[in-house]
Amino acid sequence: MNKFNFIVMVSTIFTLTSCNAGNNGYTISGTVEGTADGEVVYLQNRVSRQFEQLDSAVIKNGQFTFRGIQDSVA
Image (cartoon, rainbow, N blue to C red; front, side, top):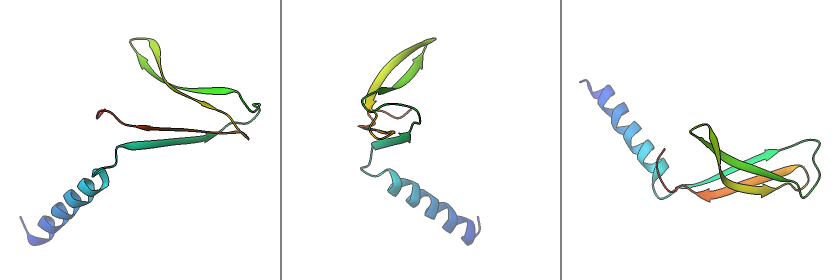
């Protein structure tokens, strides 16, 4: 393996490792038109042809945000 390939490989590993170090939180933000304040949006996961509710957020000024901690690697 030549020196350039080795440097690229090591740099990639360090970059990927540092991106995941200690940060397992997530934020999902969105905007919705034509909805009233106080309406609710749901974050759902599809499991075996059924939906599992993971979280909910209230719409305010046409915007919503989900925040959480990732408990496992998908």
